[in-house]
Length: 187
Image 1 (cartoon, helix red, strand yellow):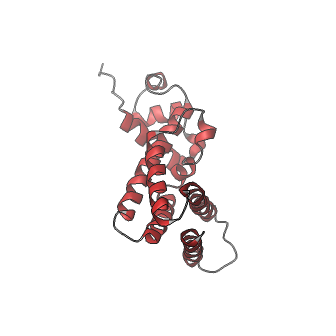
Image 2 (cartoon, helix red, strand yellow):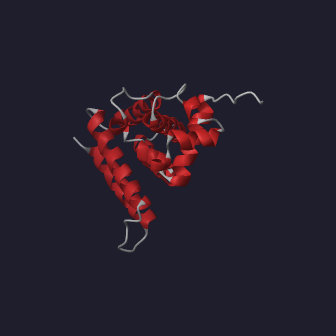
Image 3 (spheres, helix red, strand yellow):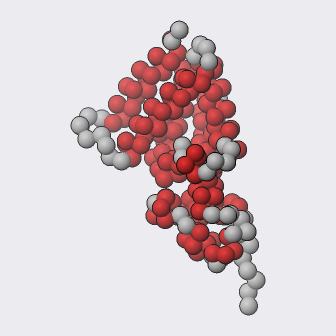
């Protein structure tokens, strides 16, 4: 009889993300992820206590990936306004590339009452640093505004909710330019 397969956290996370992206977030179950990594469901309980832990793994991995994307883009410019625009564009690109994982980025409170994940802490720090450099005063309201706008736009785009015609890319850039201008000139 072959030795049981070892499941790494990276393999578990990748399998959960694949299930989510291919079949939807509702399809992420202990059984589905166990099958994806080639073990029996009881074996996963050594790594996660329940389905919400799998969803948190996806959200944390998504936050880490997005933070890397954002850090690379914001690090390539010294213009604070351009950094804010880069953050929104990175979020949109990520949302297009991984829509199901992107939807879990802001579902943390619904997933459990545990503290923020390491990935979300890093992403939040990167966002706050960029906003602090670009806007006067407390960066938190501006960071929340930028995040809410980008998330809302991307959620509507993924749902096919822009049905009035026109160019969605143009609408994104219009909204982004308007918002960045407002955030960087507020008093």
